[in-house]
Length: 539
Image (cartoon, rainbow, N blue to C red; front, top):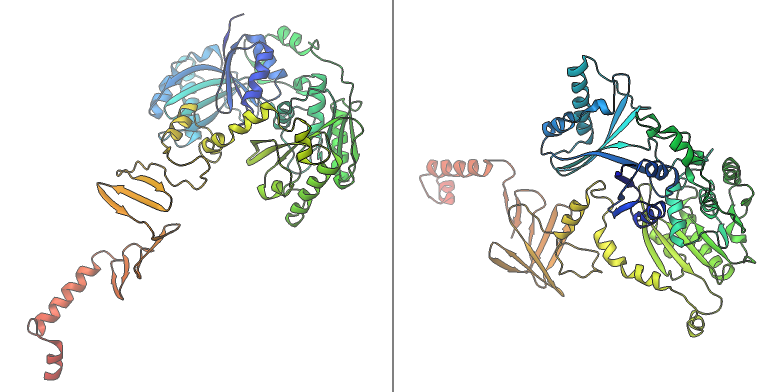
């Protein structure tokens, strides 16, 4: 079969795991990007990517790459495609867009231009047009704009692939299935020992662990995919992919899920049953404070609450209890904890061997690995027990570089080139550990160069060298106060100057000039520059 380009979207931090999955599926030309992995393959691989990948959110099939500097150029590039190869007047379609560009600032506007180009082409050729269906289109299109580089793709997945289909109900703020699977795959666990989640919620981690241990494709529960509505859909090929269970394996250990919320236990039990995994997954009501050392070696992976299911005052106490239980009741085992609030995860009080930043929905989280052991830390090192693996050391060595280069809140949909270019503009003379960086180069006419040498800061601007050494510099939003030799200048409001008790108000345009004119009129009325005191005595 003919090979073509495909793009698999995922969460930031899971790109490497997704690339490993694609390698196992037999993909070619794999390239890791930011939240995406591109690769090539045939139609069968497209079907298998949707059906078998655990860490992919969407599988896109690009149909055109083009450069556009205006909305009209987007329109013309899309209209140049022969859409009769993909659509007819009887087929509904929808356009999704992701835009990171200074030219195209509204993603929906770009989607409208794509829609208009397709509709206008059909009107000119047939006198009629296909309809738009936002909720359930026959063809889902996706356009990605990174500055001026545009990629128009067919969305082969439709509904996000994290919606496996086994979840009947969920507790508040459930863990995303793709993220859950990615975390488990990052641990390296493939079913070699027991798996424990002491705070399982709706059971996402235990269910995904069972699918991984038995190597069951996550797509077996899905009702359908967008590619099944394509004109070239091969039903026989997809049926062969769907019914292929040759890679499944037996699981001889056990997966345990616990929760101290009876409603959560009931929900997760129903979800496990819907997934057909009741024989492999055990869900029980138990508080983590009552957890005891397991008889067999086990891996623990958990996502404790961080505000959604319990009140904030109880959070620190919960995480302190987690640390105590891991230290005393999970010795000689390995635990992975995903959390959002740093003050909470620090309350665990144990030294992690690995920290990995991840995203849980809109929350910037951190996954920490804890290698537990019996006895004292010094004794374990003296005995030569492996506390931190070589792989952990390599990943931790990248931590500071990763933190410097990541900014989840800015440019979530920017291209790799934009992402790299943005950080190339950052000065290199600050240390990696300096979290309070102020040295971004501003390209707003005048270029400033910031240098830091201890407490000394030199500002160079248009050849004028100013030294602020030893002076108090405060920055509070748009208000800046400079103190120098007892002299106070307040620049809080534009045009408001206070100095040595002399107040000048430039708040209104022309007000100062009007005041000077009034003073001149008075002087003329009093006979030029006569002393005002003399004039007063004349009266």
